[in-house]
Length: 387
Image (cartoon, rainbow, N blue to C red; front, side):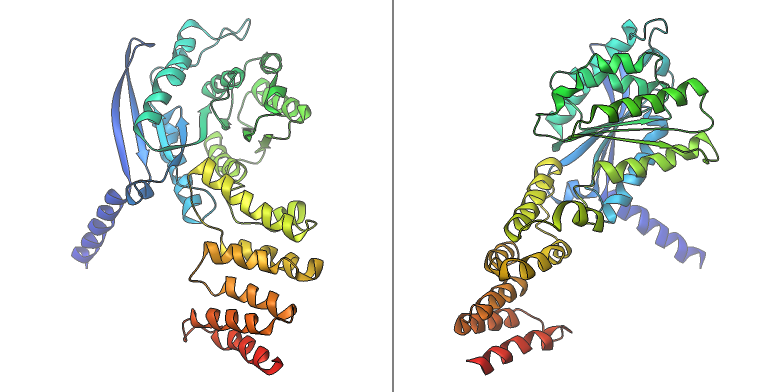
């Protein structure tokens, strides 16, 4: 029994080793004038698909946070709630307060922390983007004083990051004044989407939890439509460590909301009142954005097709069933769904010959063992009886 268990474990670890890859690199930095230990995690899909691009996450405090971040990333990807990600972790175990420090009197970065910021912006990021297939969506993660550091990237004239994850932050006392000086309203006209997540917990010093709450309140008050702010006060969290475990998946749910299938909330807020043609356009745009931002050429999920089906059928007397059917036929030529909607369009238009053609073609694409095959064939019989 023990031997069998060991064999199973060996097989399991062997599969994992071949399905994902972590590269350890000792990076020589001109800005820092020393070496930095960096880990680069490539998801299992990276090796499987030699063309696909993947969103990138830069994780400060990599010695603590990288494995936790990767675990959440893989779980969200496995449940089709987020794309797989390339994750880069920077070891800051012995250098954190030098790398991320600021002057308490005026909240400005120290000379050393300015260099570290330049290392991230001008050396590490270009290196990763040049050597790995990254998509345009980039996140950055920091904890404690590192969470304060990542806010300085908000002042970049051309935004570098789409998503900021500031965990258990130790924000400077002037954080609101600092952020206000960045004129974040300039994000408004940009054809992009941005996210800022932060949290507090009962184990933080009062000045830090207050600063986190005040910053989130200020950012929300600016009301920039494409700059999404999420703040959680984990007042019942049993420890500072556990609050990080709560925060990361909460942030993921927001950062990757566009990637996930259409939820009831998304349907109710953004889709249900649309016209049929606008609903089709919304669906096509959603998946174009997914492809561009995350490098994920998913096609359109069947569940999302069914989500807008009622709008296409019930509104405007079903006049857009033909557009809907052609869209699905283009995406899924071997699926009977496109032919079903085309058949329904022609049947309701009393063009029974064309309706019968598409119903028969659709039925021919089905496996005879499919439990829906008999009910699909009823469409053929119904049209035959009407001719």
